[in-house]
Structures are given as C-alpha cells and as structure tokens.
Length: 358
Ligand SMILES: [Ca+2]
Image (tube, rainbow, N blue to C red; front, top):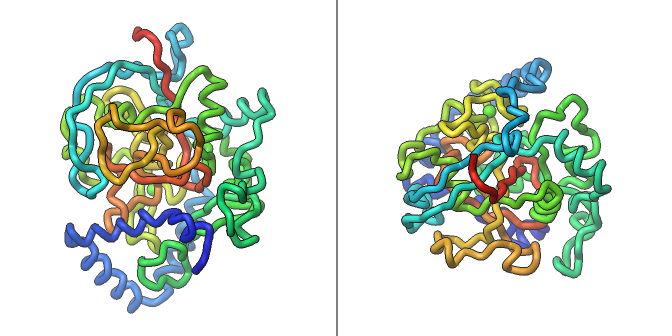
C-alpha cells in the first residue's frame, strides 16, 4: 500500500518490534492471539465495553507536589551530572552500550501539557505543523489524502490480520492536531493536564525557545530516566509506575494501571529524582537525529546542527501503547526513530534548561 508512511519508511522501524521473537515472546504472542481468535469477538467487545466504562470515569488530573515558587526554575528538577552506561541490549538499536558523561541540567518534571502548550499558542499565535498544509516539496509524490493537514492517530483494529502491518492501527487522520488529538471529532476540553500530543520537532522547539529552553539530548534524557542507576538492566520489566499497555497489543488492553489511553501528567510515582512519566504515557522527542545504533555522544547530531527539522529523531520512554508482547520500550535505554515533521497521538515532549544548579 502506497502511503505517506511506506513512502518515507514512516514507522517502518515499528516492524523491528517483531524482534521480540529473539526473546521467545513472539511465539507466545501468536499462541495467545490464536486463543483469542477462538474466543471470538466477544472478547473484543468485552474489552471495548470496558474501555468505554473506564473513559467515563477516567481521571482528568492527578495531584502533583506543590511547586516551590522560590525555586530557581519552578516546575523543573535539577538533574545532577554523572557518568553512566548509555544504552541497553534488548534491541539492536540500543547498542553498543557506551560510557557517557552528562553535565547537570534542569528538566521539566512532567511532560508539557495541553494547558502549557495553549499558553504558548495564546502568547505567540503559533500554528503547529499538523495544522499546516503538508510540505509537498519536502515530500514529493504524496497521494492527495496525505497532503492534507493532520497527524497519525492510534485506532484499535476491529479485525487484526497478524501484527505485520502496523497500518492496521495507525491512521493518518485529517484534522488531527493538538486541540483535536484524535481527529476533528475529538477535543481537549477538560484535558488541560494531559500531555500535549501530535506535536513535531518544530513545534516542540518553538515552545522550548519561547521558554528559553531546549529539548533534551538523548543522553540527557536517558541519564535523567536512569535516576542514579549507572547500568541499564534494572528496568527491563514492565514498570508498575507508568502508563503502559496491559494485555495483548493492539487488541486487548485491560487498563490495569488505571488508564487505557493517555493519562494526565503526574498520575504515577516519580522516579528517584522527582521526574514523572519519563516511562510510558507519551513518547518524548529529543534533539538528536536518529541513527540505527548508538553513536558516541560527540558524534551525535542535534536537529539544530543538522540545519533543518527533517529526517528522523530519537524519541524515548515508550507510551501508553507499549506492551510486553510488542514494544518493550518502557525502558530508559530504549529508543525509536520518529519522523521529525509528523505528529502522532502517542508523542509529546518535555524541555531542559542549561543553567547553574541549586
Ligand atoms: Ca495504561
């Protein structure tokens, strides 16, 4: 199928999720899928009904610790510098693991929320990438339906034909943008505390500049998520304190962690350094251009150094869609490429600030 995705290999790296085969999980997943098929669609309807019920009662905000207004940078956490083993060994792109040193920096304690992004838009009149006509000069030959403004939206499949074709659950949706993250029929009313999604690199950088900040590098993000652990490996299990997917992706999500879809920021316990939701909820943009392996940090190019917000970036942390049977990327060392100018309903960001520590 010719699409914006296949033409630009968009989301093609998702195919690598099947490398879970190495871990013996794929066979187990297929067996479960077969058993689910035997159980018929009643299971699916049951899941859908549960989803609806949970959405009716979902929390729209979670209490965060008070921000000390006397603090140098309210809402940000000081991340001390240190040296750590950058990378992991679960998927090939996380390797090689390299000793890496990161200087101290400030980091948003949560993902940037709809309310925060709305303040930025109100102050600047900013129009996000998903609201603009697609740059066909950058993407020549796109079919007309992919030239309209929009973003990629997760849509649970009604009829799953294996998991080889991720287009079964990702749809380019005209009119999807940060105010309508699921498409024109959706909105963010009452969801100001949810992470802003469908934002691109350009959007995130514009917000960060407005705040006098930047996006984290991959090494900064991973070090912050490690929270003092110098080696990967302590966080290989599906985290209890994160919004991920419980069940068989992409058809059954029990929502045992309290949320089937996105969660407001700060609903789970922070890590040891006071940072919320680094794992799960939404993938987070970094400033680093994606390479399919770990370069030395000195070799890494940021999008700014690259000179244009094109190509693919490293995103980190996994999302509410990460499940053990499909995407074990709710780990500090996990990484994934993301088209820099394509928003998605599971993609957000947070900012960092280079400034003296407390
Ligand atoms: Ca969840």
